[in-house]
Amino acid sequence: MKKSTKKLTAWLNEGELSNPPAAYRTAWAKAIREFKLKGRAGETTLVLDGPAPSLILGIKAEDQSRAVFEAAIRAIDVAKKHKFDEVELGGVPRAAMAAALRGLAAGQYRFKITAKASPEKAVRTSVIGIAPSLEKETSILADSIRFARDLVNMPPDQKHPALISKRVLDRLKKIPSVRIETWDEKRLKKERCNGILAVGIGSGHTPRIMILRYTPKNPKKEIALVGKGVTFDSGGLNVKTYEGMKTMKCDMAGSAAVIGAFESIARRKLGVKVTAYVGFTENMLGPFAFKPGNVVTMRSGKTVEILNTDAEGRIVLGDLLDLAEKSSADTIIDLATLTGACLVALGEETAGVFSTDDALAKKILDAGESVGESLWRLPLGRDYRDKIKAEIADIKNVGGRHGGSSTAAQFLAEFVGRKKWAHLDIAGPAYREGGSSGRPGGATGFGAATLVELITKL
Ligand code: BES
Ligand code: ZN
Ligand code: ZN
Image (tube, rainbow, N blue to C red):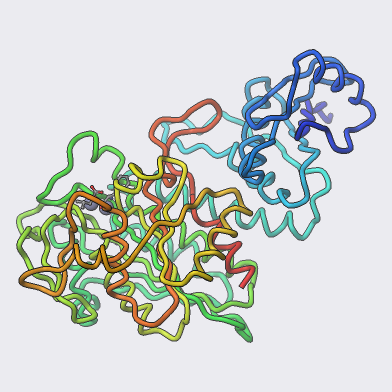
């Protein structure tokens, strides 16, 4: 016999409800009057009158897609608390349909390693008025974001370079038009990837670079994506403190977002050729660990004086950017949890965008806005280049206390030539320490949606 399901109808409110179902009209008008609802983002009102309990969610904010994304998460939270089996989300503005669906998926996401299988039941979800094609595309993306979040949330010992590259290969190898190469230590030496090798040498687990190629039939454009994949950042000999180290399994979130975006693009068969370069390594302090004072000759030939082993991400990225620079792509975008300074500057919700190309920067900011990921542009240039000039090498890997995100980004710029390039420092929004109501702590998958949106628009 079919059990009756408990459905929660959730309606978005921008100060006015658009097309509310007739059955709820009176109950909702009364609730809006009684509770003086303004439709502001964050308002969450459970309405008990009407044919069944329902929910009114405020979404009025300067960043509408993000407000809708977060409202959808709240809807799932309420549904779980009150044991509903199904959530139907309505009143969604046209431009935020995808954000609504991603929010419903994000609201369900949990990461847990337990003895017993998770007893939590999935809530069924739907968005009223969403076009079937958009629903399909967005479900693919939501699935890739889940994978990216799992990779970041996984304990560091379960994802050292050999393990994570195997996991990524197993998941992506079956997608048509996708070719994957994994370079082990021997190959990395042959390819002169001395940057990632230097960072990895203090660990018992050797580094890997993965090159993921998606080649559609008649590609209209070609883009290279690059991701920092430090599977654990202890800081190396410049060892981190307890506070600094405890979340450092997240230091591969850039590569996870790139892999997630890559998977969605390939599964959706988009007409852009995409090559993803991700570098996996641990940053540890074993007996051979690289030392302050060392000079590394990077893959590009540039020499880098290492002054702080905790500024390792830029060294890994330097080699990856050199690979991308020498490829046939005309645009390179890298994602990295690169600097604590970016968190200081922009907080936990916003990523820094650095680019030598104004048009590309604008496209990225627009893509972020339309998917509801918060981005803010920060500067590059001569002032920062001066700060990383070294005495005994071409450049050094730290630039003093001030402007840390910009000196790190400028360091990366030294490995890019004429190609269009942008760097996203996602150190803030990639990972949440401790959750809040309805939103678990840990990985967010930040960046994947922006990349897919950007590449769709190219
Ligand atoms: N992985 C960190 C940056 C980071 C900090 C990411 C917090 C996520 C949250 C990076 O490798 C690092 O340690 N950077 C140093 C650079 C410094 C030594 C110049 C930093 O930000 O302190
Ligand atoms: Zn570090
Ligand atoms: Zn790091």
